[in-house]
Image (cartoon, rainbow, N blue to C red; front, side, top):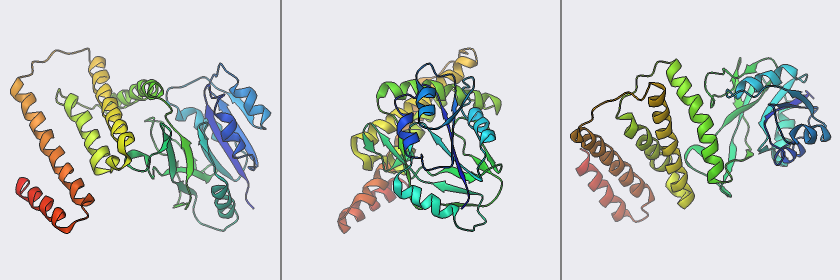
Amino acid sequence: MKTLSIVISALNEEKKIGRCLSSVKWADEIIVVDNGSLDATSKIARSLGAKVFKQKNNNMLNVNKNFGFTKACSDWILCLDADEEIPPDLKAEILSVLDTESDACGYWIARKNIIFEKWIQHGLWWPDKQLRLFKRSTGSYPCKHVHEYLSVDGKTSELRLPYIHYNYESISQFIRKMDIYSENEVDYLIRVSYQFSWFDAIRFPVSDFIKIYFAEGGYKDGLHGLVLSLLQSVYSFVVFAKLWEKKGFNEEEIRLDQVEHELTRDGKEIWFWLLTAKILQAKNFFVKKYFQIVKKLLFI
């Protein structure tokens, strides 16, 4: 059977890393890259059999993940975060894959996000497939954007079972991470010379809300889905505001009729997706037909 290294990049994760490491103790090698933790992250990792390498913290999180890959010695690498966990049934599937001849160099794995104490099954958060299992020396992160997918030089396939991600546990945690992620997002937009306009202050958040809540079915997750969709729209607005800040808080006159035009435009799009959702949810044939007619009349 081929060997497997687990690579984890962590910063001040003493409360979570034990759960993660315990779920992969069956691996041939466990590597933890400690990004300057001030707590017991390294001590706990060593006590659970991990090899610990210290690195300076980098807002481009994937830099230290790539560093960890260079320290791995096994045939395959499974990249995890400290707040993730491999369930026993996925462990069995991974071991089966490693024992099977295949031309795949990497495998996508669905990620089961637990947010605010609930498994979120729609929107951005499911199936949220991530490329995490790959042949050593064939994969790395591009390090251009904080939410990039790992890139593998070769064919990829998919595993059937998901792993668990204990994501946001509190609103404060979401806001703290939003501050970090938005900085990286703004840096990326500047690097690619994105030319923003004042109307992005409206379009960024509204577009994200519509996409997550309606198009991706976030409304099916109840209050969790609504709150998360709104929080993501706030994140998008913060990205715009920070981009404006980076440009020196440039002054610009905006007429009320211009704002009215944007809000009217967004209102029409919201109605389109609201009616689309009602059609999908309707169980009665006549109710479904009614909403289809209304949608056709409004958007022909």
